[in-house]
Each structure stands twice: as C-alpha cells, then as structure tokens.
Image (tube, rainbow, N blue to C red; front, side):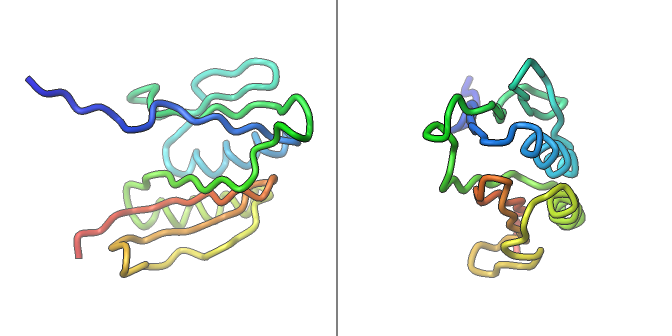
Length: 130
C-alpha cells in the first residue's frame, strides 16, 4: 500500500516584530481555515484543524540578522472566496497588497499576494482545472 507524503513538513519564519507578524498570520491564515495549533513565548505554530503538518512556525528572531526576508510562500485555498477573504484579512491586519485576487491563467489558479510585516511574499492560491 502506497501512502502520500507532503513535500514540506514545516516552515519556520523568523520575524523582527513578533506581535505584528502574529496578528498578520493569524488573520490571513485564519481566512483559509488555518489556526494556531501551539503557542509559547515568542512562538506561534499554525496548522489546519485536521492535521498538524504541513505547518508554519512563526518565531521571534534572536537578532536582526536572523529575520526571514525574501521568502515567497503559498498556502492552498479551498475556493476563490477564501482567496478573497485571505487578501482582505491580511491587508486589514497590516499586510501590504502585492496583487489583489485574480485569475492567473498561466498557472490555472486564482491567487492573491500580500507582503507580511517583514516584506515576505505570502500567497493564497486556489488551483482550477479550466
């Protein structure tokens, strides 16, 4: 019997302003049904209610050199409405819109892109068959 394994188990993002980033990720990922599964001082781990992997670990950076920058991460959205909700929630929580929700025909997907408080490119994507 063959089992399916995710390509990514978890991802760590180290932030310069933990509180601002936690507000951003909690709002943006909450719109996709992803919540905080574990919280500790300076750490918030996000995963879906059905399973704890793949997950995103948001952590307070020890110093400026440890801050995650230049990252592009995409989260699966169940439908177009979730992509729209992600974009609205992310911008309302301090993110900056890179691309408003729209159809990207070259990827057969409906996507939105927002910068997190450290400038990382965070995307919600809903793959479509046509």
